[in-house]
Length: 415
Image 1 (cartoon, one colour):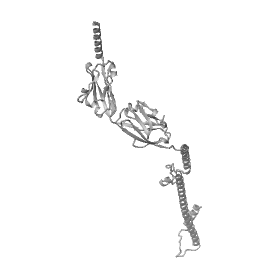
Image 2 (spheres, rainbow, N blue to C red):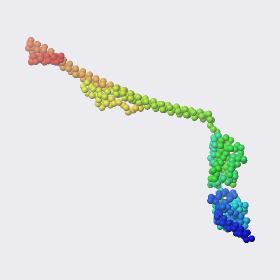
Image 3 (cartoon, helix red, strand yellow):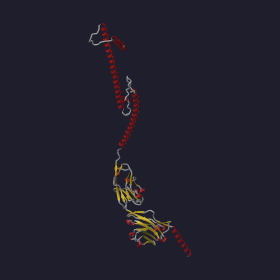
Image 4 (cartoon, rainbow, N blue to C red):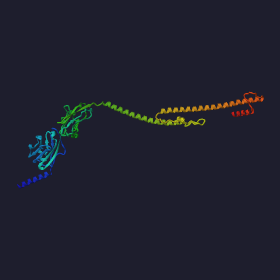
């Protein structure tokens, strides 16, 4: 008797010691649920200690009466429960022995959103769990999605506001045919239409953010039509897929080849033309410089030592190198310069001839006059010697000897 009592006391002491070291853990992340769904609010003891004989209380802040679920002596006390949760809550009785005191709420309402408190009064343990109740819309695409035959395409669809749908079911349909089915956290190919098997997939790493877009590979013309994405108990949305045929492959390839060859030929031709122009222009300018230097002297000397090198002549003699790009213009200007220079020389030569002719004519006239005078004087002198001049003669020579000397001097200078 005394031994049994001692064992009982030891067990109670051990239980108290373990309870003192045990933590009651709720959820660090908010729990998200959709209207109409069932949701589990997690709460457990760690390390695991039996809570079979413990009073378990779930309450909600701002609720009156505040008790959502009151479990005592192995049963729910309905008289303490808030009427809005009547017949919608329960604990997992077979899990109490493992320290699991989580509560499940059935048919979630918008009013269920809030912060819940899980507590074990005898152990003085409690933990909080936040519940978010969402009513997201399913958003598809307002514009048709276009794709070419044999290509892959993504049919966009998501929940707004974003909501984790990994625990929900997702369906894609085209008319009555099931294109893709996701349930129980995995794809369900068994119920999928045969025409889409092996060609559809969801982005499961994006489903936690409400992305339920569908990827369709190797599109055929028969895939065209109106698709519907839906989440049970939520709205559904549609996406229209337009499938366009591929352009003729032969024509497409030929066109590419023609364009490529044309581009290569154009590049080669342009490069050759540039090289030719650079070489030709360089040689032309070099040869032109040589010809201009040989053709146009710097100055032209006249017979009277005058220099035909004034500003006007320098303008004619100046080579024109300013326009290297227009060879025809340079050639024309060079020809004009040459013609003007030739005309200038001709004028100078003619002027020299005129001056020389005038000078010669003047000398001839002087000689003629002098000769005529001498002859007249000599004849007069002879007649004088033979007979005296009469009064009224045209020329009277008072000094015949002086006249003879002058004529003799003129004759010698003429010779």
